[in-house]
Image 1 (cartoon, helix red, strand yellow):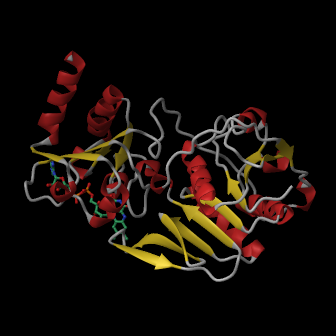
Image 2 (spheres, helix red, strand yellow):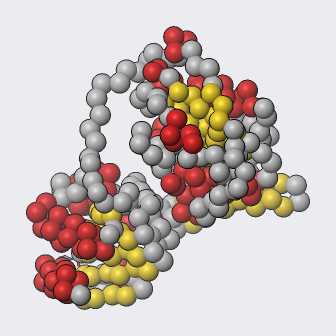
Image 3 (cartoon, protein in one colour):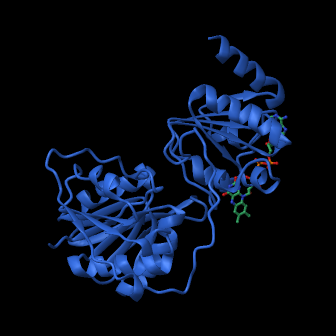
Length: 321
Ligand SMILES: Cc1cc2nc3c(=O)[nH]c(=O)nc-3n(C[C@H](O)[C@H](O)[C@H](O)COP(=O)(O)OP(=O)(O)OC[C@H]3O[C@@H](n4cnc5c(N)ncnc54)[C@H](O)[C@@H]3O)c2cc1C
């Protein structure tokens, strides 16, 4: 079996992460066959959930040695899979998982790599890629030398793929655990179990800033509004650094990039590094007590007020509606 493109599919050991499937849209735009690759242990159900995306194959590297996503091991298996397929393009989406693993795979494949790709254009036989730089204030247009490439795409820039009626075959990859690198050892995992949607997948996100003051207020106001609207919670770096919200809630240049239908920013100044993570939101609502706060320049709707007064009223009104 051959395929031009190999797509790394991320999962949380229970289900596939939807944003990783947006790379399928990228692969379709590039043309040629594509294969999906899942790594881990106990992947049968997840592999079955991937058979209707028009892939030439769903490749499954299911082995005890891959039970934990150790980047040095995963990179070797991914590079071997790409070589076996004869794939010249390897794609993942912009997540900590892919950014940890794919650069190593790129090195093993001796292929150039780009992160945060938001657009691809084929013109006069040349391919150009766009990626934001300087906290999203500029877009760089770049080209890659050679035929091989490793791309990390921003899922928010590529649509969710439509499913295909045809069923892709599932192929198991042979994994020789004893030959994989043993330079890193899994020690433990800390997992936050939450009923709220994933921040990068949510249709509604409520973001909280430094003025939320303490964890109790953050949970009551940001969490309270999120639960009423079925949304995810996000935070500024200032809120994360002061311990109001967990690290994986940070939105922005050094956090997550989101593109929800509705983003509500509570007590957030609108620093350029935060805006870099929210600018693709369809509607932005900002509540800030300073009428000159920069967030109001990007907001679709703005309310000048104190979050400690306005948000409890909003929560009460939503509960009564
Ligand atoms: C290299 C680098 C990377 C960074 N990466 C990120 C990133 O990824 N994400 C990120 O968010 N930041 C990032 N930052 C930090 C960023 O520059 C800002 O410092 C941060 O976003 C500010 O957070 P904030 O808006 O919560 O706090 P503040 O800047 O303190 O703003 C608080 C806002 O709340 C308003 N306010 C105060 N009290 C109330 C109230 N009671 N009710 C309503 N409004 C009120 C104020 O008017 C103000 O506008 C980065 C910085 C650097 C240098």
